[in-house]
Length: 277
Image (cartoon, rainbow, N blue to C red; front, top):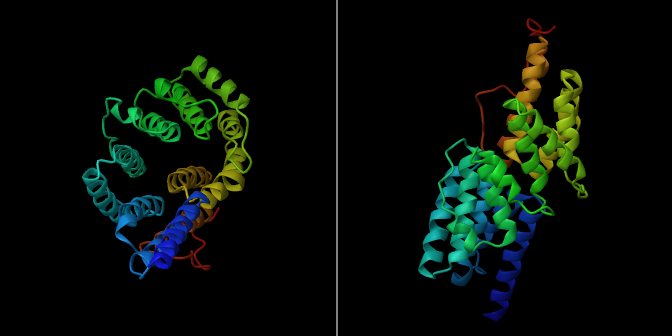
């Protein structure tokens, strides 16, 4: 009935809204419930799979994300909806990149049908994958929310390669970017990284980066920051603290992915002080 269809559309947009406010786990729960309810309709099926692919990808359920991608791709191909197919291609690239898989090559054809926001995501994922980072970051719009991360990635690569001039240019541009409310300050992150004070850098990661990664459900950022924190702690022989940060990250991933990760203990036994400084 019309009432059922209207409520189905409402549930669909509610799930999309949850993804937009960085609650992918809740979005997937709603989509899975919606899919088996009396309110589901065939017209929405491809977009449900589209949103599930995004939600599963952001919560670390990559096998399910690829399954949803394949179903959605087949449906949109049948409908000749090339814009959605291009968006799914970018989403697939992002999921591949998170897992360290090679990013699929592209001759730029996707850019012909993508909207500007997706074009920015396309350039960012390619830059993060090491595909001509300078050129790709330059193509991200200056007012895009993805530009600060792109400049941070570029600055990091310049720093790693000893390109002082490139690092200086990226750093200055990053400082000039207008910070959005609630966004991570990549300029400060770069300053802490470049200062050479490991302890201060570790504290910045713990106070700013890790909470932001959890808040936005950015598993790639969470893993990277956790690895850096634990490496600094291990270097300073604070093994117990390092283990606790690793466990905390695993627990978060386990929670959002609804999986039981049992290869690490929940906490270090109190009596085990053999490796504590």
